[in-house]
Length: 172
Image (cartoon, rainbow, N blue to C red; front, side):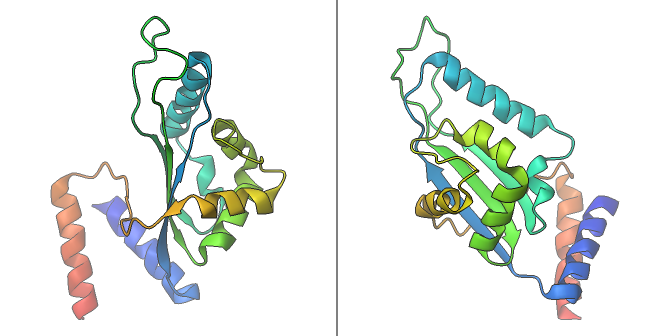
C-alpha cells in the first residue's frame, strides 16, 4: 500500500508542478525476416530489459511505463522453425506525460543504445543516430489503443484500496 501511495504522491507532485497530462502511445513494428539466432537475440534482450531493476527506458523524464512485447511467437528451436516462420510484430507501449513526439525524442536521445538493441530487428529501423527519422518511424507505426497498461506486483486488495482512495480524493 505504501508503494501505491508513494506513486500517487509522485503523480500529484508532478501535477502541481506542471500539470499531469497522461497519454498512451502504442506502435506495432514489423520485424524483419531473420534467422532463428536473430530472433533469439531479440528475445534475450527483451528478457534482460524486463528483468532490469531500473529500466533504462525511464531515463526520459515523461515516461511512466514502457513495454515491448513480441506477438505471434512461435517455437524458436532451430529444428522446429523455418527461417521465415511467423514472428512479430513488436508492440511498443508507452505511458507518458506531455506531448508524445517530444517524449519519443527524449527517449531516443537518452536511451538510444537500448532502443537500437531492440529496434534493429525491425524492418527499416533508421537507428537512434537519426533521431528525427526514428521518431517518424515510431509515429508512423502508431495505433490508437486507448488503453494504458501499468505493471504492478501489488495485490488486488491494495490496488482496490488505492482506487477507492483516489475516488475519495477526487470527490473531496
